[in-house]
Image (cartoon, helix red, strand yellow):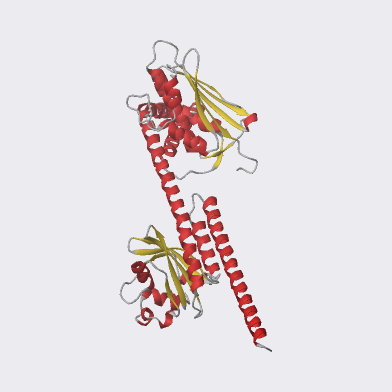
Length: 448
């Protein structure tokens, strides 16, 4: 074989190796992008639950490096909290390596302490030969002797150079990670951090909205305190009266058991009414995460009308209702939808309280709207109505026509309705008054 053939053969081998390397790198990049896509999908599918997101991040990080063990840790002041782990599919591993706080030891080369100090990946080829294990560092001893880890890689999760967590990728055998694998996981961690930060901000925004909505609900109920007390006073007074009557019927000679039984039945009825009012108040004052359930709007709105009825009577407002007998159920958070009705009814009563001697009428209607595939609720008053300026700004945050109003009630109501897939709007009425309406899509047959 001449020199030309040798050079040609060598060039061909270099070309084959280059092509193989290029194909491997393309495959790794495709796998990395697929892993990021899975994380983003988990973020989109789990707006209220972080655990599926944590698990997806860890599964894909270990898969990128062909690793068998791993953990996702979030940094909390000076410690790490394990929020997800991956290991052999048996309960022994979970018992050996539980979720919870991990305390880095800054003396003795603890790998997590190194991560905190350097902000860079920490790669240990053989933990059993590492100085931290020889010095019996608790974390490293636990990794080696309890979790059966020999090779480990800790990659930081950084936001604007601030440590927010770490990905721990581990192997049961002494099998160091390649530079290429470390770079892949480091890039994956950077993109994961962006997704986590987006999720964190969304949760903060949602929690702030919930807190504001809760405060608005409490403030509205506070305005109704006297009316609610009156609503409770009536059934409690009736219980006392019927209780005394039952005792008198029983004291007769002979006792009139039929009359006594009737008195006791009325006591139970009045007590049930008081319990119903208290239960509705308790639900409205709780600050719980949004809960999706099938809601009977007729029933939910009747409960709110009962809470506000005495306030309407005190203000001289006549309340009329038109409920739909065959109303489709809706899917949503019952308390949030009741909050919308509470705001709209109280606003209507207050709007009419300052009006002149005209009729003060509050009309509440509920209709099925087959054309829109849902339910429409209306709250109409005979107050002074809406000016063109107020109509255009009515649902803006902090805009209010009340001297002591915060201007958040209607803005929160619109957010709640839109979150349920509906819409909320207002129109002026002739010759006076305003009509607020909102729609909610009907729940599908499968309850979604």
